[in-house]
Amino acid sequence: MDLYKTIQTLHAERERLTKLIAHLEHLETSKVKPSQKGQRRRGRKRMSEAEKREVSDRMKKYWEARRAPSGARNEVAKDDPPTPPPAATA
Image (cartoon, rainbow, N blue to C red; front, side, top):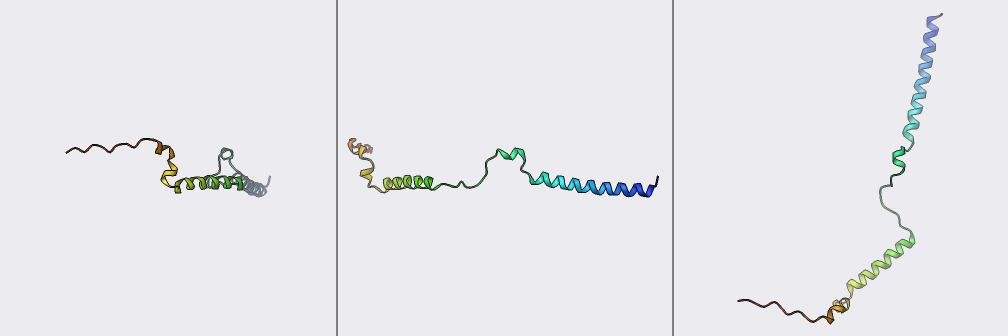
């Protein structure tokens, strides 16, 4: 058996295995890991037009109530008798 030919065959086999390992490692890193599949994506949530409209209507109502005169906001409070000021002690 020729020792030189055996060494050449082993070197060729090692080269083939090195390329195969590199290719498999590349495939492993390019895939999404199974533990990350179920996780939610971080970042800002995008809203549909309908959701934007709902938020807009809700905020308009909120600001209308905030800008309303204080008497119009608390009509129930008008019916309550006024509370007397605390007694002054001298």
